[in-house]
Amino acid sequence: MSFYSMMSQIGLTPVLQVVKYRSSSNCCCSSSSSISETQVLNGLPSKGRMSSDTLDLLKDCQLSVKQVNPRQYVAQIPQGNDDLIIVHEALEYGDCRLSIAIPQYGIFENVNSLEELAKMPQWTKEKPLRVATGFTYLGPKFMKDNGIKHVAFSTADGALEAAPAMGIADAILDLVSSGTTLKENNLKEIEGGTVLESQAALVASRKSMIGRKGVLETTHEMLERLEAHLRAMGQFTVTANMRGSSAEEVAERVLSQPSLAGLQGPTVSPVFLKRDGKVSADYYAIVICVPKKALYKSIQQLRAIGGSGVLISPLTYIFDEETPRWRQLLSKLGL
Image (cartoon, rainbow, N blue to C red; front, side):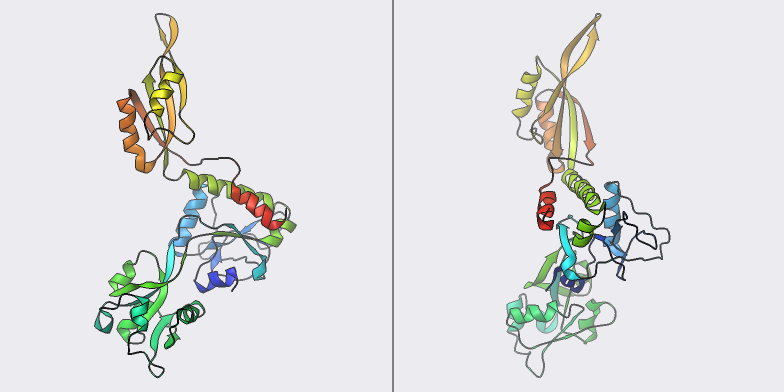
């Protein structure tokens, strides 16, 4: 099964598509009615949490989207599954899983795994396990791959979570994020019942990147911004002053503490003061990058070695050497 068909089956629209052709889709983007040679079209989720999280990510990367009319949905998707190429497979949001869920009560009360569900004597050829889902390809394939024969799939109008309570299904197969909705409807996931796990991804049109002027360069910039922002998430810049005899002596003290190493090590620079008409450097400023989970511990360690005037700033970007994903993309394109 192709990547794009699979994404359609699990109900996901690629977060960003650098595309060439026009069609209809469940995504929105700001674009003119005609496509110029240098225009790069981006397909975005049109509603729900995926939409808001996508717009927030782009805004954080200084790639803000302007939607002239909130009711206007214009979509651009490529024609042909073979044209799609994965640019970034893990944008670290939109996490979800496609899972089987069954009631917590009745005959399912003590059923907690797919194996136990399959062995229930109730399911026969004449009376199969009824599963409500919108994923009519992945559902049957998953059951077949797991050797479960007596299953009948159906679609349901409205929320799938209500199907078992209404008596029109025994189980559901649907996307799950936090699991709160399942619990509110007295449903539970079961061991071995996860079909696949997913998160937001960036895909693009191979033909556009190779054939249309400016598309590859724009994709490169987008990838760099996304990578740098994702690398910076949860990281803080910590700046502090410390008395010392030399930059080397201060650096030695800083590096003696396990939480103060930073990305490659601390930056240590003199703080110049003027006393009695003379300029001297009795203090040194140290700058390190610290993950959020180690922030307070790092402050304690700084204080322990004489640090004062500690300043904390969140990071927006961490641009490192060229992202490996760019080299991988060029390799996929044969460039």
